[in-house]
Length: 208
Image 1 (cartoon, rainbow, N blue to C red):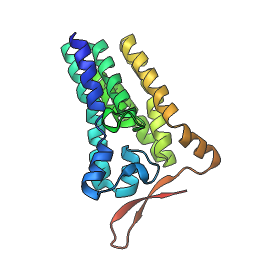
Image 2 (cartoon, rainbow, N blue to C red):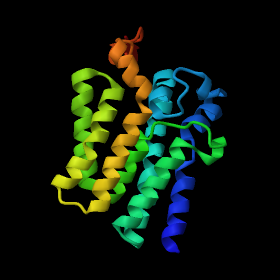
Image 3 (tube, rainbow, N blue to C red):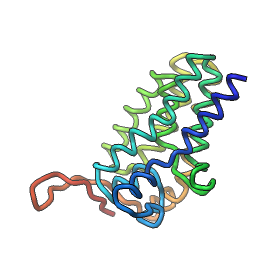
């Protein structure tokens, strides 16, 4: 019974569309009509900068981390995996947006893994940084990090539910990046670069 409650709470937490809410609150716009149309941190960051992008990253990570950690501590890794998976599902199809398209689960998956298997999350973070540094593609870095979850969990000796969770999370993230993969193959994906604006401050920009 407790596990079922924790899973339901995980889905509700994951359903909180922070990218949509924060842009609506501070800019009065619907982020789903801007850029890629995604409510996730990458689209928010590209459109509105780090001032909104960074809070979305943190909140989207937290909504996977907290349910997974609480369930792991109260019941065990199996419950943590289920609560984390529920949060990911909520981010993908959020209740508070009428089950319409949500985000691509990258930050929420990372948070869920952090709550269940911190060492695996650390490996994935390093993979993300290396892949992003080498390519400047957020999508490539996200998919590489996601696909590292299951091998890292296996190599670090985590239980089979964590390994399966990592594998399913990795596949899910890649599937939700199908459009990005198509743009990569066509050479149309946006690459992130840093440049200095007119006032001399570094700004994030996308270049093809």
